[in-house]
Length: 336
Image 1: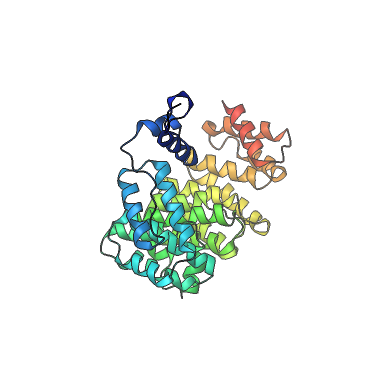
Image 2 (image 1 turned 135 degrees about the vertical axis):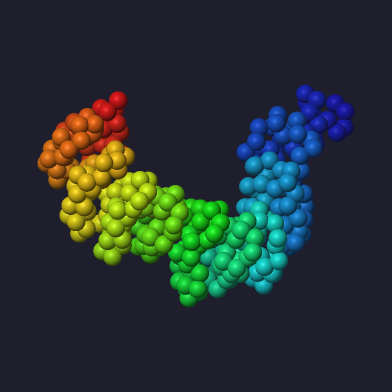
């Protein structure tokens, strides 16, 4: 066998490329075919050096390589100088790169328990003239305890402000942060995040943002004032907001359930939109099957179009399924 070759005619360089591809979650054949794609290279562990790799990856790299350089910068940021990272955040003018380096700064703030480190991100989120850069600064906070960080920085910037931004991209980023933070950091069990979402939904004039916040953020830990705010959204002009508010009431804590049921029954009787009525029925079922049965029976005949849906709920409840996902799936099966 010739020096510099391996069995089967695969060269060492090709083998290394295949191993790198496997490490990045790619198929070896795809990596070997893309000789022009940027490859990992040895660089100094500095913000400047890593940001150069980030720029190259975002411009020419595969999604797997982009994930790799993002992860590498986050890991390295833990040991980097806070001042260097802050300066990089303040000086960056490319939205995509700002999101990456800002996320690294937020990671360092979380790891070091120093919430003041995210102040440059908060400032750019509300003060930058470029809406793309404002949105990038907001997105950089995703994955961090951003509601807590904002409070510890004096609530100078809040999600109520962000969802009133003139840019739809910034408003969406704020809503997506809260949805992600509730589900992925606190698993729906954090009152401050849930109540921040309720306040933001009430503050925004963007129906899509309000509906996303009410429909996708867990309400299981909110207090009475937040439940009242959600209940007021049942009178919103936008159908999607009313339906989302109805679904939100299905997840309120036990002490709030009786009031939520009354509001949902009133909504079903008074709102003629089928989507809103369906959301009300769903939440009545979610608040408790034993209480839902007589309420749904009393609502049959209010709207003949909805009666098959009521029958499907009642049919599903006969199985006494204790998991909400199973009950919902059975109802949908019966409704087909």
